[in-house]
Length: 246
Image: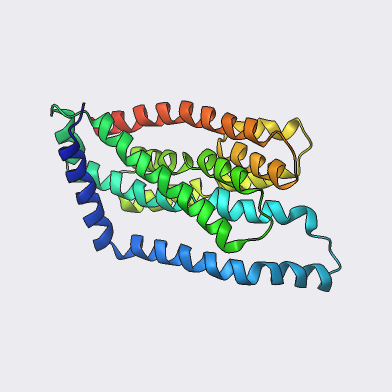
């Protein structure tokens, strides 16, 4: 097992990297600012569009809000974590751990737990800020935990495939299209939309939609999302370890 001292040291190093990177700080500040802005402006925009164009947007409130807090919120710690894991590859930290008595997998587990908890806080917190088209609080927390693994999965995938930050930006643009699959699935009849469940964040959004509509099956969808995420996490962890050994 990796020692607590080593983990604290590496997490401290990651925190210093984050504090010195203006881009990553900017992402965090931007996201928090957008959350407050959305909470104040989104209901007014929806009402204006609905009345001005004579459109009934009530059926799509949960889709709009879930896109913001279920799909986008976990991407913020995922992007930040991806850059930090990539820097750990570039500066040789990962290779040093590979030949040390402290398992790299233990460090990755701790980092991914931190990213996941941050994603839960952002999801639930942004939902509280927006305070619009939300499911009951227990369901919101369950959705937050179901969506949270998307953060470490995005980080591991980016850090495994990218050789530098330029490539990481390119990959993140591609991976940023993932939530579009969930939006598209919303308009598909069941059971066809279930095909998108191979993309774990869909299950978290589905749990959100069911809970917001007053349904009772949201917990099953949240559990399905966690199971699917666990399978993907194991695969992506091996992918990152393979890249780290090169």
